[in-house]
Length: 276
Ligand SMILES: [Zn+2]
Ligand SMILES: [Zn+2]
Image (tube, rainbow, N blue to C red; front, side, top):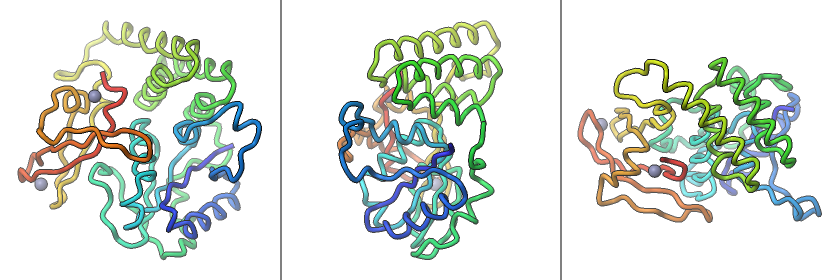
């Protein structure tokens, strides 16, 4: 089953539901907010992060409302941390967050009719057996045993150099955030083995092993994209405007960075959690 997570502000619920219905008609599973507390949801509380982790892609309904939604911001940051496929749909022309640099939005009417047809070429096929999607599902599974299997699958993918950055991001999430120590330890073992294995190989200059997944881009108001190393930016507290802010119950970092081309100051929100 290929699950798509549609992130939206509550004001854009009509658009999101139109997208959900079109996705379901094509054979995708969509994530919907639970409407009631079931026994299962009480016994095994899933986090928002698990729901995004388990999804094949995140469709972002972007609007002036979304730009002010703390939840949407939290979804974006987590999807970026996992290097998830993130597909923005713009309904009112509001500029995208300045850290969404590698994607251009699909333009839509407020009703969002027909959006899925436009997104289809970018989406994995419904029922895709792609290893990365299986990894996502296993890593977000309710069963501890299956989440441990995710680390085995990840180890194999790293050996074959498949989706390296995405796989490492999933392992780091499991190693740091999983509720069960057994799952955390297993993910950490795979990460350690990979670090050891890579240490013997020549690395590109100036990049330490694993650096690539900490590189992020930010776009200034004139459209220049500058790239930064999240580890360095987070650790050095480079600017006076480095502060933790609360967003929808989670913390994120607000940082002042300078455009490498024009020198403009950009306020960038990233999540330093999980940096070393
Ligand atoms: Zn600039
Ligand atoms: Zn950090």
